[in-house]
Image (cartoon, rainbow, N blue to C red):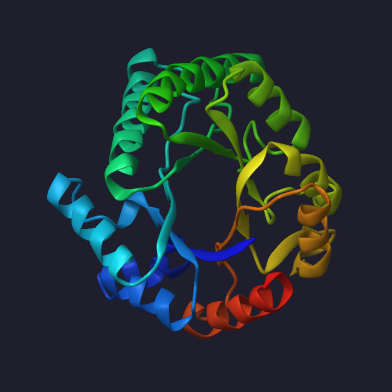
Length: 255
């Protein structure tokens, strides 16, 4: 397995303009990461020259672009709004190609007021299928994240992947997002995963608790997972101190 980090981990700096993507890449070098996941939110624009510049900067630093990530919501009752979300994902599939990213993390969404679970599921499956056509043309996989809403449980995730029925749709396994039986759900999701977000905490009976990272790694190993462990840091401590420490922990377990 490979150790990486999501740009999202440094959102408090990137959002305020206190860190650039180039500076994030420099941190990746300092932490001896294998690669980085580049979140769409932090690009100043999506001009081809900008995307190529980021790709070049990563390559010059010996960092693989493990994936890109977009914050879509397919669970829109309004067809026009849903079409906008589909188009955004298609656009980011093409942006991912320019970044050299082999995959794009996508969301499903939550059930909007006045709608049903079945409707939200149907909208998401249809949207995934439409986006998968472009993904197949461009050679970029879609990685659906277990991210609450209609992907809150492993059963829901399995159902959406089966419904999409595409070789170009798989899972971004987020180790901190399953609220019910997190370790069992992680284990069950591993066969569907092409990338993983690894967190320092998991949901517990009394709120967030420290992750048993060895159990997570063991589950991934047992399922034959060989992809990225991309740190997505969300805990209270400053990521500038917490992320490097978690990187060292992961590296000690997988290298």
